[in-house]
Image (cartoon, rainbow, N blue to C red; front, side, top):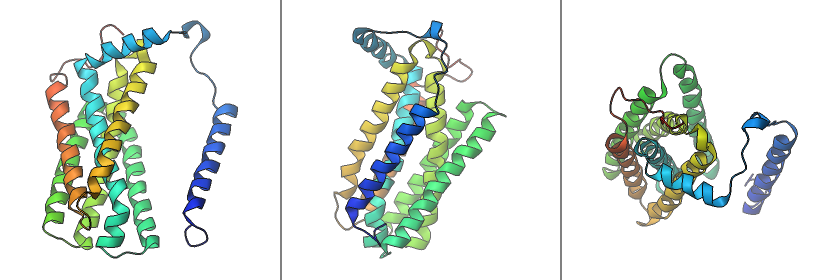
Length: 246
């Protein structure tokens, strides 16, 4: 797009895509919840549900692990254009191709995860995704601190970002599993934490100027926090993750 226009055209394209999605949602997507199960809740009841959710340790373990897993990916999203083009000297077009490849890696991880869920349960997949994310992000941070070149860094980034597909998809599945009675509040709170962490990480990756180090450290830090919150707040092995009140 930048070869045929300027940066404003990107936002015009986003607006057009948003309009198409809105139209598709209005025309194609139908309400699946039976009328007798639909509820109209006051704002006060919604905030009461949120207070309950904030005190629910298993739910918050999945929310925080998913949010900080997303934060690791958002650190990459925020810094990758600068790192690839300014640090590694790539063109804007080559960066776009590599960014698309990493996007396909996340999508592929989601597809593989969907297949594996049929044979396993989401929680083991979440644990393995968190382990892969921590290992990948930690190795990436070390490689960047040691001034490794693009030929070393790019494959590590690919594998690290792909692992986020397992972390986010399984964390939101597990977070929602026991919250059928307050699904709207649970989904909204998950999204709030997810994008709040992403927004907080974004400015941190540029604090060192011409360096890829903040990106590596931010990704590793988010990955480790995701694992720590899951291990600290999560259910004990063998315990049910479904809220008994649901």
